[in-house]
Length: 140
Image (cartoon, rainbow, N blue to C red; front, side, top):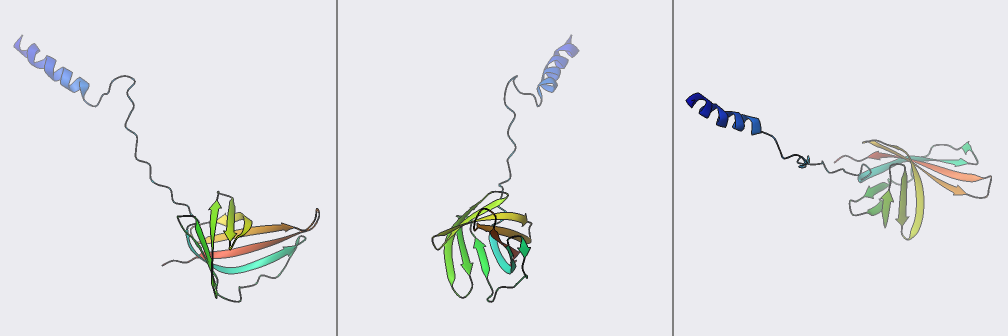
């Protein structure tokens, strides 16, 4: 009988290890914060105009141009001057307001190092002018 008295508390202890009450929620795993991949500094490498479907020549900016996207929604374009603005984005679109002027971009590609954007201006129902901008992330 003495052995049985010893085994009952041992069995109860082993049987209860790591269990929770039925219906109790499991502890949630801590989610890693997601960082917006567009944040940071980007160098504008080149752009190309596409007028009514005809692709123009790829051209580099005349002056070194940097685009900066801040965590607070701030947006700056820096070349010979600094032009402040704001931005918001989704996975496939970017909306900026630069010096009070709004502009929509389609995000064609966004990787850790490269960003390709397209803006479209509809001149009439059949003619449009598009601009593709190619940017490279500036690493510190």
